[in-house]
Length: 263
Image (cartoon, rainbow, N blue to C red):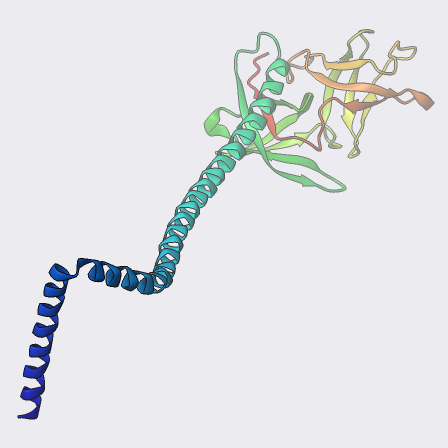
């Protein structure tokens, strides 16, 4: 067969070439060394050319590994920043609530044994009514007539307690009446709401000694409100009328105290 003859011929040639190289290596070592050096010189550029892409591939692999590691670290840092932001927001909210509650503490009348902290959850305003809804009801001990304190002074009084929430008649409502006394002058009057941002003082005696800027406090008369709670500040004494600005900021109410006062 031609193919078999070619294979046998190739094998014979390889054996002959191997034997020749071995004999030449023993008889002419310098020639073999020179041939090896020439072969190395010829192959060196080719090997260098082949090794460059391989080295570039290795460098590319290391770069991809580094990018992957940096991406994972970046994602972990983003998650940590998000958690810290949530924690910071929660701390700011707690701080604001804590400050609001702290502001209520000095307003609780001396000797008052109990009070109920509540939050303003709704307001109803209009030309004929000034009222608010608070998050405390009869289940918490709220009863009609209790004084509501917050935001710097008296806010109003409970008029309709529910089981879980109560309606508060605000100090500025036209139906609100609070017995007050001047802190410095000792003058007594009734602070009435007029559905505006101010209070009108009624039953002020002729020749009174009230002065602008004087604080008005609850007198405790009638037993409905505990004495000594800030109500307002005298603002206007013109034309025979006495007007006062409420001590409590009715537009910035958040938390309030409901005083459980026993006359």
